[in-house]
Image (cartoon, rainbow, N blue to C red; front, side, top):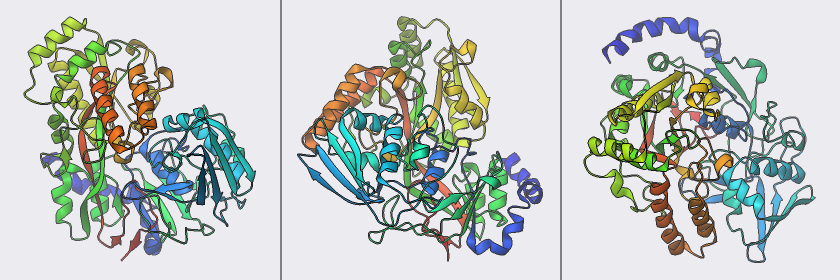
Length: 530
């Protein structure tokens, strides 16, 4: 902490070089330019192809979705003008709003939406369910989409309005026809901002300009991705500053406007700055430790269950987010706390004192034989770096042969795609966070899907979990869904696709004259200067 504070002066002196000319030179247009420091560099542009939060935030600037989700997780039409539901939710007819245009000037047509939904559905877990249930997805005319399902599909608006990865982004048909296994690199959407490709500097800067041709919804209340999206800023600049001290110094000196994640150990310093506001948001995530289910030792479910006995959620959360319990919550399972599906089934395994001697005995009985455990550790995301340190320490105290693979976020993203053993560039576990909006039910929960090679990184397989998820989707009412949610959480702690590390609330820091920052994902409509 003292080293970090001593560095602040040096960090500030270096800012003129690190940020010029694109920050310092922009002061004349400061009222119309917002300078933002994201949690990591934007390494992949396609929000359908990549699930990183930074790519998702980029996606919601450039692209739009047929439906939007508000702060209370209610779904509303967005690009859609409305819909007609028939045949017990087996037939849906969606009509597009008038006046929608892509950034290249072409109108948004229903066939663009059809191609976009098919590409998204090939990569997204919710989308896979949608496509599997279809008899027909077509565009009878330029403003009409027709869905015919084999069985009732009442969750269609939730699927097409999800605010978690992968984004159901609507793009021109020519781009949406790109093979789902390849990333789209040309960023032409219909969203409120245009991506300025010629000003992007990898590892340093990303730039967007207001889309003057954007047509906001004429009704509703702006909330998350729902309602009218009004861009008050002409230009948005993302500045990639991996070092927390440099971030804090830049904010204090007025050279950036908004830190997506305020450095926890520098919060007292930032709170004393007269021009800075530190804000604990209502937006939360659940941190998880994801296992690789394909390679030893965590391809053995008994070993995964044994390690649960070593998990102390408060250790992870305290290390990453300080000892202030207003910033985080333990006793967390599969679903977002205080929402309809949240329950206490199976949570006893996380409660009470941790008995590491018993964990060691359970690991031995499960067949652990000293196999190397490699934990992926991004060095440029402070809270993930810290949690990875805690994970390595937890494994070691449990008697496992654990080490960290430390690198920048871009390298970590590449390595986590490897299915090789650790000796050939693979991995055993990594820490990440799932957004609150993705933890309301078992369908959108990315980490809960257990479809083997088709699942998210880690590739778990569990037919019982998949069967219960399908039963939940067909349940007739909320009480029936809640009963199945309890069964899902019980099965979850038997299969252990990942370990829940607890819920945390995002802390942002920004210039005091910046107001109306939206709830949820870092987006830039509605934001203005007082």
